[in-house]
Length: 311
Image 1: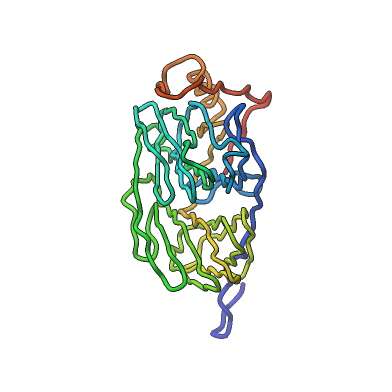
Image 2: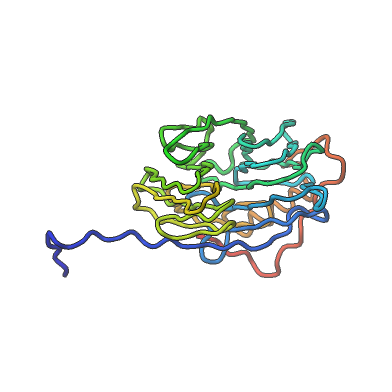
């Protein structure tokens, strides 16, 4: 038994865990390459955030840009956020919209939705993130939905914030999420040191886009994601360089449910994944995307062994 005296120092929060990305082709035969930090073996979720792709800056004339044919989603929300460029979105609800820098497009595919994503002819450089949010059990079969939101920039000393989900620094996003979440772009001035008040019940991830950013004394390079466990009432974010730096802050309460992820589906069992694949290949559960010039994506073959849940 340990008896703490008045001189016993408070327990320090766990160190920042650094998640490094892996290169992944995105979207079938005309794939572009993205850097994926979630999911991976050491960590599957941050709050309900279950997927994080970071891409660009890509010269579209050289790479061909983004061309992802119609494909399905179930059990999740997709979050599209750009730094530069423009993407055309079409979905099976009939939505035809554009993803532009500083503007959130959030699509809910509970029971099932399909969409396509194509960089536009106006795009010369494509650069952004694609994020997924796992839906909790009580909402994971919810209906299709699409929301568009343009957050106003918020100034704090040394940084500018765009809060696209949840609340931070007095800014609040009205966009509906199904679990407690935070999503924000942070642009740091040269030499800036920022202390952000956050919910101590949240775990957080800081995905660095450009520059070297120090999170709670841990340096992070572009493409890396720093994970901070729950228990912190603030996050110290520093840009030690003489150039502007940028990162995306993600957060949420620990998800508390096991999920099974495969291809574009988030489920709870291998059997649900099998059914979702059959429904995409043979049924009409996900609807039809109109206006895309080309065929839809076919589902890949399932692995021979059963899919295991992620915690």
